[in-house]
Length: 404
Image (cartoon, rainbow, N blue to C red):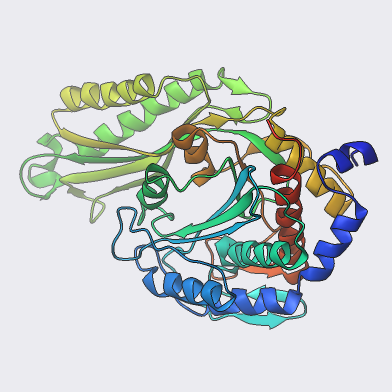
């Protein structure tokens, strides 16, 4: 817990916590979440749920903008709430699209919310909306303002992250950003970058029985196996590039497919995996090493190899002493009674891009939710209420605290 004087310096004290906690209505928050979840929105098809969020915000009296941001099929949703006085702008950013799995309708049972996207991340977006409502109702945001941005094209491999990139490029950027992904602890200040590797190995000719010429054909399977072997060697070397919080760099293979039957020489082999790297690693060097291995194997085995190196997000880090980190810790401590340990983000998300592309600090913090990317998403109502409170308190601390 931060000292009382530090908490007051950032505009966060027991009275502020009480007022905001009283203003946050769990039933209203959950109604918002259910209204978002009940609209199916697989990646690249988030138009209807974007319209639903627009409707919710306008119904609450908030202004809404709908920038295309490079994706006219589902224009983004932007809503701003200003105090009327100069100060920092805290951005809440979330994605409205969900992974491509069968739709599960929302339901409440035993204090838990279930349904597609409740964990990732419609529940978190609903908490952002509730935080804005509480800030407006209490009048505790004395400087600056908050801005909510919501978008499509997040979940890979169906999306490529370009929708949020478009928002950033069009200037929808605050002075700092909170992202309600399903990470309740630690407070992440560093994260590895990731590229998805897709490799297609082919040979000329047709599939053929091993005893009718197959033995003499170039083997796409042996070529694939050689790529896996070479990647394993590189991965061993990458173990030396290790960060005490973020972990090590890696070159990983998670998929290997070839052949139609056990005694046939196939004409195609597919390999897929990931390359992860730490801040400070030259991305161009990692990509050049990857393509160099593929070129060597193609020549060695007389096959053709097409290799995709699809960058999800680059590595990032933020300064643990940044005023935004201090404001967030002050808010979390005041709202929950404890500070978070500083650590690393285990996955990649849009926060990486806000740091690298927009140049602002980004903190991923959301509910302790379960089942993301499965048919069994679930999140406790109490967790969504907690996130709404922490987000509102962070706005008070960051926007209304000591200004740079």
